[in-house]
Length: 114
Length: 114
Image (cartoon, rainbow over all chains, first blue to last red; front, side, top):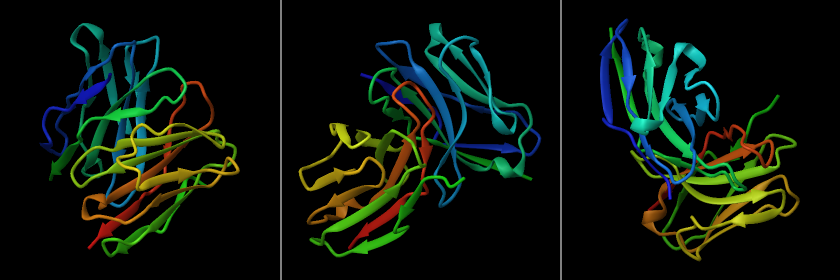
């Protein structure tokens, strides 16, 4: 079984400040990990993913995440927040077999203050 | 190229009515997924198709939910005798193949059951 926990349903940062969104997962097999962003009334857009290889993953819009197996974490960061980053962010874990369904966390709403 | 499209975008149903939600995946994508996203929560897996075969329907909440993809492209999620707890956004996603690939999400159908 797989599960994802996102600590903090709401995170507020000032424009230009560091963004840190936390994600911890549980998986019985080596995980595939994803971060998606959801803007109002839109579908989910992939920010970045970890499958194998380098544990520091760079994504779109300046976001990156680091897979830490010992901590079962995949936290999302961005050095400097922009107003346009305000959205809902979802961490997800998948499995590498037929079906590769995703298990999502509850989401973190990022608010960016001017 | 066109992304995943879903129709209708919004659906209001009276309790007890049947509804049908349509998903048009990206052309050529083998895998298709349905997720249910309740208000303020992350998406939850409902069912998965590989071409026309429904390989996993473990997430369907009851036998009132039925999904099909008869020709391996367009998919329909049908909910019979809708209940208030069915109110949610229903997301469709498609993916190029069996092996681990990004899932591309549609904008969703927001279902409100009165």
